[in-house]
Length: 165
Image (cartoon, rainbow, N blue to C red; front, side, top):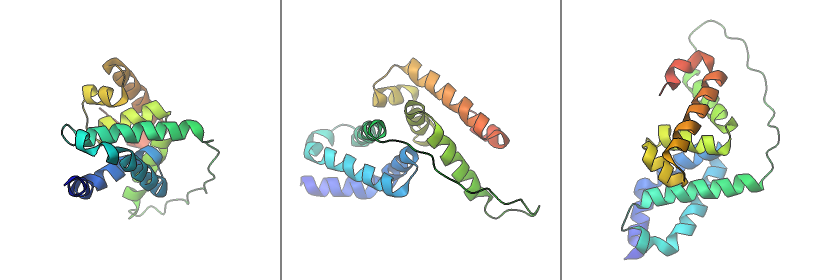
């Protein structure tokens, strides 16, 4: 009943994995492609993977696949328009603006820092789990998280208090 187990897993954990893919790529369509590619890589090995921690394994496949895509593709400039002046009233889109600003700031991080920030603070993995997922030492996770958070605090100074460890 391999197919049923895999389908049930994807139905249950797919939205969370898609969110991880979106945070890594910053693009909804690219995130769907990334998740689909990762799931296609995992499917032939599902019987072996399902016994342990399949979500952690798929997360690692997401990160490594995204890294290989990132290394292959050229990252050009992305033009953006200027934001209009605030009218002083409460902005009903402030949460969306914060989310978009944070997503843009995360996308501006180097790939390793971005992966650490996503896994540590959005996926809520421990330092050890993040290190295992990325295949590096816990000290590397700590230093990359520190550098990434410092960059995010600089990029979003008005919201720095929300980005503390």
